[in-house]
Every structure is written in structure tokens, then in C-alpha cells.
Length: 114
Length: 327
Image (cartoon, rainbow over all chains, first blue to last red; front, side):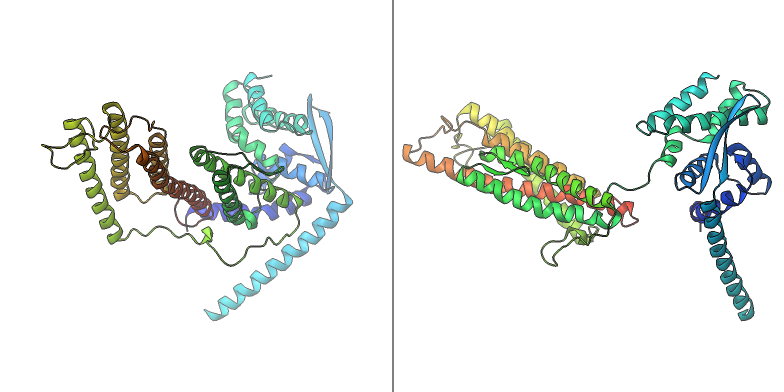
């Protein structure tokens, strides 16, 4: 398997993960650049040109809200999670936990076979 | 404010034109780039800004991430594009033939208007009609896609299905056949050029060159001979190219050239054509015979041309979906 193929599969996997990640991060109001830096400090990279369109889609669906604030002489758009966003995050986390549990089970079964 | 940043944002804005949230998107990108440049390089020097802009990505790609990813035609309906076009075009071709034969207009407003056509006009009209049919079918499939509902489009299980097209076999014997064809055609071409260089025509009353006389008058004979030599040469070149590639575009180009040459041939004036004595009563019959020999040939070539255009489109589509390589 080539790096390109792995990269394209990773992109597909990231799509869902990024939704959970952003909804989890926004328990505290944040703006895009701060979010990207925080995610980076946790050892994961999100491209800016992926993050902002994602934020826009989440906002369009009513899962987050935004407002412009003027701080340090620069306007910044702060995002916050809504009640609908919290509910969605809960559901997505349940799905994610279940997927992890399934993979753990299969890994255990594979280890037993070996 | 850096001019480079404004140019970059303007470029993104260009690809987002028409979207009401365009200015807000650009403001957010501007804010992000300026903050990143300031924090990560300690200033907004042009060089640092260039790096941040480059890392953000090409303007078109950035804009595309904000655009609705819905396809113009849903993948499930793509195969119907050529299926339905082939059916619509078949009717179009039949009605066109009827318009020529019966010398009538056909109007099915607003979908179809076939004026009374001469044979040459009809041959020119058919490829245009094909493109129009393709456009109409694409438009219908576009609306079906945009409706977003699951519509099961019908398709009968009979007739020619261009979906079933397979990659042309690069078989040894196919190449041998092409090589023989190329050799025969180059022989014809060479012989025609020899006749033309010696007699200024390829049409002679006899193959006994000492007694042969030109069949046509000098000017008409020269024109028609040149057209015929061009036809032989085009056919030879096409066969030689096909020795190296089975690509469909070779056939398509060859079809276009052949059609153009047949068109030229049909447009040649018939009066004062023959250099030998022909009974007056026989002339209309010869004219009729010539036209009705060339017209079916032209019709077959037109159909082959349209088929080749469909195959090229179809193969590109399949190749894009991970099938066999495009020609």
C-alpha cells in the first residue's frame, strides 16, 4: 500500500473524527487559529483549509454558533457549541466508543488465534 | 495590510462568487493568516506571509472546500447519460432521415425541430443533433440529481448497451489485419498518385495506359482525383496510426476527415463532367447512382463517428471511476 493510498484513507477516517474533535473542543469558546494550535499541541494536525469549512458546516446545521470579537486589535470569530451540538457530540462519542470496543474485541480474538 | 494577502483573498473570493457568506469567509481567512504570520514569525514581513499563504493552500482548493460537493449528475445516473442519449439520438436520426426523404419539417416543440434538409445538410446536422441530445439528457439527469430523491431510471434489457463496451483487444491478428489494410491502402494511394502525376487524373477509360483517355474533363477530373487521393491517403494514415494505438480518437478523426471529403465530392458540379460521350438520357441516372452510392457510405461514417464520440466519453468516465485506461 502506497503512502498516497494511506493518506487518502486517513482523510476519510479523519472526516468523522474531526467532527467529534471540534465539538469536544468547543465546550470552551474558541476561535479557529487557537483551535488549530491546541489540536497541534495534542499531537494531531488539522489543515486550516479543512477546519474553517468544517466550522461553517457545523454552524449551518445549528450545532455551533459564532460571533466576531475584537481582541488584541484583531477581529476574531469565536465559536461555541449549542445544545443540539452537545447532543450530537454525545451520539457521535457513543458511536466512536462502540467502534473502538469492536476493534478491541477483534484485536483480542486475533491475538488469541496467534 | 499586505497586497499579497489581498490578492490571495481576491482569488479565493473569485471562486466563491455568488455565495452570500463570501465576505465573512474571506474575513476569517484574513484574520487567521495575519495572526499565524504574526505569532509564528514575529511580524507580517512579505516572506513570512508568503509561507503562511502557501501553507493555507491554492485559492481554488481552499474555495472548493466551502462549496457544496453535490455532483451535477449522481454517480448512479451517470451510465444513463449515454444510454438515454443513444435512444434519443436514434429517434433524432430516424426523423432526420425522414425529413430528407419526405422533404418535410418535423417539430416536437420545444424538444425537436428538424427543418427540411438536403442530404449534405442532414449529414452536417447529425453530429450537432447528437450534442443537443446529450445536453438534454444531461439536463434531465441534473434535475433528477438535484431533486435528491431515489429515482429508479428505467432501461430495457435489449438492444445495444454501450455500457458493456470493453477495452479493444490488442490481439495479434487484429494488428495483422490492420497491417494488411495499411499495406493495401498505401498501394492504392501510391498507384493513384502515380496515375495523377502521369495523366493529371486518376479516372481513365482504360488500364491500357497507351490507349487510355481521361474519363472526366481536365478541371473536374483534377479536383475529383485530388479528393480521391486525399481519401486514400487519410485512410492509409489512419491504419498506420492504428498499428501503434487502438485509441478511439484515431477512428473519430478518420471519420471526420472522410465525411469532409465525401461532402466535397458530393458538392462537385455534375454538368460538363464527362470528357467522353455519354447519352443524354443516361446522365440523370448516373448522377442518381453516384449520390445514392456515396450517401449510405456517408451515413455509416456519421453513425460510426457518433459511436466513437460516445465510446471516448464512456471510456473516460469508466477510467475516472477506476476502470480501464482512457484512450
